[in-house]
Figure (cartoon, one colour):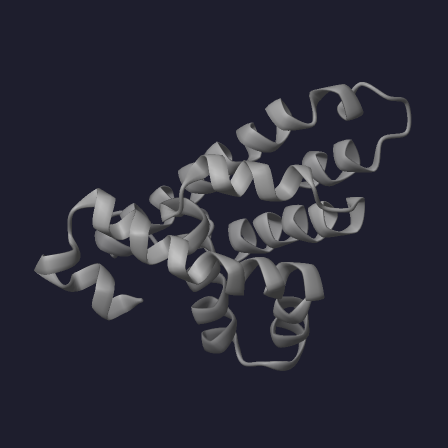
Length: 147
């Protein structure tokens, strides 16, 4: 993914989307099987960052209609795991976790981009599950509060 991202031949947003769409079924399977969470628990922090960054990159770059069509068909547990992934991403890449904007401006800028990506994805979840969110005792709402 890093090579695809940095290659000038693939810098066009349409090309980026096509590449992400190729990886999307893999990411969907990881989320549905909860495989990422096993790695987050058992791997080093660096490995966790790589896993999470790869997944978030694909979710950001893939066709958003495809992404939203996918999660609408998934059981509640998969959506809850996805929201957990968003929460973990914010924990790992929080701008408050960076030392200082002055000390590490590129890292801070990168973390801000990650945070905005998560916010955009959460916005889609809220829009797509607005009816469910209105129900009393909704588990999605509890997960969204943590984000």
